[in-house]
Each structure stands twice: as structure tokens, then as C-alpha cells.
Length: 402
Picture 1 (cartoon, rainbow, N blue to C red):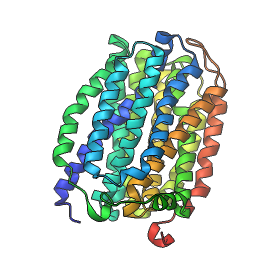
Picture 2 (cartoon, rainbow, N blue to C red; picture 1 turned 60 degrees about the vertical axis):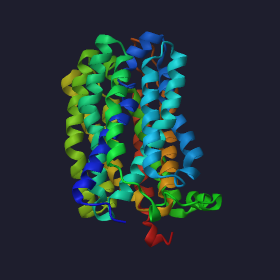
Picture 3 (cartoon, helix red, strand yellow; picture 1 turned 180 degrees about the vertical axis):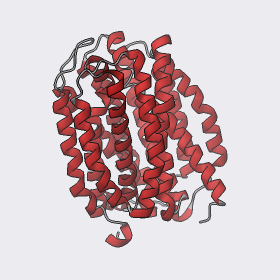
Picture 4 (cartoon, helix red, strand yellow; picture 1 turned 135 degrees about the vertical axis):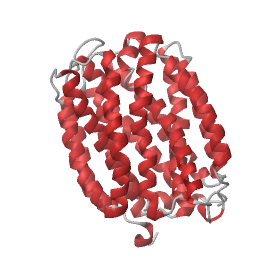
């Protein structure tokens, strides 16, 4: 199926990236607001980690439940419904007045957000041919860097000056016109792309059990477990252990976001030129090493912390670009919607498990130093290195006979 000119393809990709930016900020902003939330609701590190992982576990459950259905409906309609649901729930988070209320809203937001991310990746795979897919994913995942450069720092400033609720409310209002743009620019995808396919449960089960798919799910789980054992507690550790003030946190994320925003498209180009597996094999050891350094930082202040956080963000995003390219190549187009939904679920559940494991290891009350963060870093690095053994077993579906 032809999707028009490359200019239109680019506009679609930019629209998806803009809404991915909104989704990423919605997911990320609660983590740097950790010190404020702990004080506002009088919760310890373990309860805060539950607040973070509520999103990821809910996203994982929703993805499993919805996976058999996603390829039965038009991709555009599904995407727009999920976008509007995500924005409504983000506003609900900002209107929460109690910790339990916020916890429930994060669960509902996670259900929409996880499915939204899965459908976004399926749309990119439908619109962009394989020979340009690495660069396309590089552009899409640059939303993470842009969220770190612009969204998270602005959110921290708004939260510090006007209350932690304000970033959620502003984000929801910002996303509404982008949803309108998506309704106008997205093509009505049908046919081989699987959107009108009436998939049977047996077909869905085979999607789960094909060997290349199983390895793809395993790879996603290991990577996300390692990343989210460390990421949710970075802001708290910077303030409690490293000597960075809450007012300086935006600067840390700005530096990290700039580096990530610059390197992510470059990683996409390298994936298209040298292959996803080669690039993945290069970035994973770097990512693991930076995890260990980050979690063992002494009181070095802003100047010492900002470059380490920047390298952590850049290497983490770089490995995900190459890993996602590997994973997307392992599935046939007609299975893509359900597969990406399950893959998103696996990622979110693994992220939640990583966050909870870290919460069980880390000790620290509001305003007190975090203890055992270095142990968490070693665990995360071990899981990350293990992905080097898994990645070569994720084969393209043509090569594996899927």
C-alpha cells in the first residue's frame, strides 16, 4: 500500500513523535517530582516506587488484555481513542488530592499510555518501509530526549513553583491540539497491515509462542527491568546523596536531554547502515557501565552529576533504538498490532518489577540519604549485560519462517 510522498510520511512521523513526547513526559514527570510527592503525601521510598510502578503494571495488564483486539480495528481510530483517553487521565492525575487517588489515576493512565505506545510503534512500522525504519525509530525515540530537555525541566519548574499537580494539567492541555492534528494527518490503514484482519485466538496464541517472538519478549523484559531498577530513583538519589538541589534538577535533565536528543537520530542512522545487532552490542556494555557509575556517585554536586546522567540517558535510549528495530523485524505485518501490544505489556511489567525490586533494596525516608542504591546499580548492570546473549536469537520473521 502506498502512503503518499516522503513529505507526508515525514509529517506523520513528526505528529506521532509530538504525541509520543506528551506520553513520555506524562510517564517521566512523576519520577523527578519524587522529592515533592514524598513530602506532600508523607510517603517513603517504597510507597513512592509503588506510585511509579502502578503505571507500568497497569500498562502491562492492559496490553495483554487488549492484544487480541488491536488488529481487529482501524489503527487510526484506535490511536485517536487511546490518545484522548491518555490526555483525560493525565488531567485526572493533576486533579488528585490524596495519594490513593493519585495511585488509582496512575493505574488508569498506564492502561491508556501502554496501549498508546504499542499502537504508535505499529503505526511507524506500517507507514515506514524496513530500509528507513531505523532512522524513523530514531526520530520517534528522540521524543525521549526532547521530553528530557523541555518537558521534564519545565514540569519540575512548574511543580516547584506552583505545585506538583500543575505539570499534569498543562501537559493535558498541550496534547489536545496534537490529537486534532493526528486525526487529520493519519491515513486510514487497512489491508495487509492487519487492521481489518479477524484474528482468531489460535492466531494470537501463535503470536505469543513463535520462537523469535519469545526471544523478542525476553529481550524487552531484561532491558526494561535493568533500566527501571535505576531510573525512578535517580532524582531522589541526586538530591539525597549527590548534592544536587531540587532547583538544580532541571539543569541535569536539560543536559541529559540535549545529549540524548542529539545522539538518538545518529543511532538510528547507524542501525540502518551497520545493522541493529552490531549497534546494540556496542551500546549495551556502555549502558551497563554507566549504570554502575551513576548508582555509586558520591557528593559531587551538579557539575559531576550532569554528565553521568546524560550518558546514562543517551546509552539507554541508544540501546532501545537498536533493540526495538530488532524486535519489530521479528514479526509479520498482519500480527504487528497484537505483537506490539504484548511487547509493550512485557516492557511495562518488567519495568514495574525492576522498580519494585529496587524499592525492596533501597532504604531511605523523605529528606534522608538513600542507602543500597549501588547494589541496585549492580543488579541493573547484570540484567543489561545478559541481553547480549538474548539479542542474537531475535531473528527477522522472513529468516525464521514465521
